[in-house]
Image (tube, rainbow, N blue to C red; front, side, top):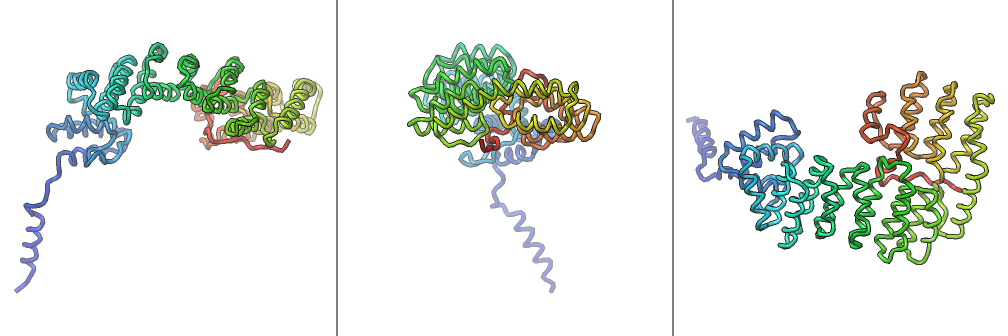
Length: 456
């Protein structure tokens, strides 16, 4: 007799094993959530409807919002991607605004867990709550000892509020003195993430109000120099310099790092004075000096003073002559070889790199495409993002070799590859605010990237 019927029967029995566990509600919610990979509107809408058809999933959804993970045992579900987070919020919105409002109000009145508070804050971020309400909830959580796990959600909600309304900046300023450590650090990170001149002004306005948070503020300010107006460089340099000799080592080091990123020539003497016995500060100041001058001198204050004196003498006496030669190059009939010599000498003194950019404009507009290409190469050696606005104009140059030189220089300045077409570049530069001559924007590059150091 054939064994096939018996095998089939046994297989069917195994498949229909009544002891096999059915997926839990949490597992089914996790399955629907993690099925979405990208923020696709149709998939999110369909997923939200499917989640609510599973039954009473409101507690599971709110818990996932608080943890930032899909439902799982002991909160160890997979981290939610942006698309999955969007699906989660869409499903919660379908529960009704009343339920969300009650949940937020309960958390504000009696915060019971960090997960509950984080979920409430993320609901605030997707709603119309203002900074006052968000920070009030954060203060209540800190008072209940629920600091851990709340900071990320608070940063998200504050970032959303700052993006929605300029009044949020004033709210942070007015509430600053009442914030606990978690709320204060989250507010600083949200401002840093927001970027722009208004966020930078807000960060600067908070300096000195609470000494225990000044180091955090100085770090954020140093990371927020994108699109800083050129007229504000000296003022911000003085802000940093005030903290160089702080008794708080963290403040002093953060100030030195900021001055290195700002690369203001007038701050060099103050940095040289930090090359003393405080080893952590001395190391930080040395790195800042090397960044400012693009020169790898050792940590000797006397050597740096001598170098600075020579650079300033060159800037006062020799640089004006060379820049005048560039200005009158076409009228005086200077050859490409002549201009190579002049450009080389100027690029060997990058301390005043930002001021030198304007001096190369005559070369960028020269009738000879070879001269325009030379200008691109020289601006690359100066290594300042202040060169971006004039370089972007050459993306429309009539000579393909000049366009290629400008594009290559921009890519090296940004240290990233971008598509070669002009329209893409222009959109990228507009996005980063680099469309005029009044910007510094040093940290639009990866902050970890350092200038190549040259021998003096």
